[in-house]
Length: 409
Image (cartoon, helix red, strand yellow):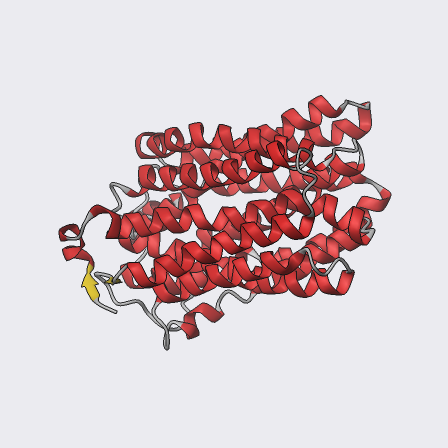
């Protein structure tokens, strides 16, 4: 397998350049993961009789590999990041393909663990490769386009489900097998069709924790905690409370990703113009209001239409989260990107290991209480985002950095 330096990659045909590989991987991953997510709530309720406690435990198991994402640092000592990312995609596809054949608590948990290892290790490596391969000037807009490509793949998966689920009376096993199989096929193409790209900076292959990255770590922790509530309980609520069927919940997901396809590139441009601080402040302010409104569904008896609208808005504002990636790219030492991506992914998943299971018990007693906690988390994130300087760079990581430097003088 040939090795091509990143600075020489522009001599390759467009379809074999690093950007093309990032786009292809961004397309492959949602084909498996979006299908798994779209069917999950109906599958576990109908086939395995899950309740709020079970779904909480499932997502706790799913997040364990995310908590162990720092293992990527040790794997890249022996395997190139690019290869590890593609192999992780294959593992995600395999776990997804097998899910429908084991409709029991034990079977679902085991296969969730397999697919989750693939998903989380892919995401860790993918974030690292994006920040290494894309220039700081191009990163915000290109990341927006990659989000858009992922949304298009999700749209394809969801649209296919909406059109064919009832028409052809598809089974869970068939859909999981097809979606996971296509993901694996694309990953195998990526493995053999592209050269290995040599990054400009050699990555540190040990755990890196730097004091000056503390704000990035804190924002990652809060993002992980907040995301769990949305991932675990928002769609589950639509099925449990409002009785959404597979084609209905999938149609809701479809609307989400149409919106993301349109919004993500615009968000990328806005990050380039207005900066990470302003975009994250908008995101967290909006999410606090949305989570409070979720609680209002239970307090005031708002119907399914309000729940669906909030779900779409929630997803749109989450699309702004890649501003956190570009913030880190601006403040990081180039050699820290890979190890810090792994460490940040672990930090992002600390709360994910215990939060879904514990909140599953709270959900049984007070679903609105879960969303009150989420609103509080969004407000905490807002306070942290206000500490980001208008122009973050190495040495100016927070608003305190410039003040401390001035005092030192």
